[in-house]
Length: 155
Image (tube, rainbow, N blue to C red; front, top):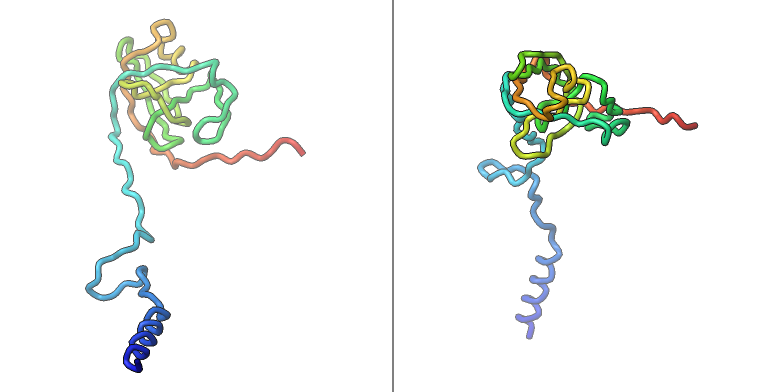
């Protein structure tokens, strides 16, 4: 009886002890925590070619991915992965017209397209009637990927 009481008490005492901390590094032990690790940045090419489309009235006046209000007459574009606020020269490969615009939104979300220009950019590039065109994107200045915060206008 006394022996079983000692076993029960020792089990009770060991159950009340603290568990090991998994975030603490021990020499030779594998790292168990992802704290402090950063995501691997997406590597972009400086020149990209592909199909561009444009977007207009449906999004005019709405917020873009970088937080500014979309102006369909501005010279901006949407790209899936280029850092927001990247400045790029976009050339229409069908007519050699080109312009400099800024990436301020995400998209296009249609398979096979690499860029969604604003209505104003598509007009200057000369593909409004066609709807899509082959383009070359040349990065001039990499963006800071910052979101623009707006102050509330109501008081």
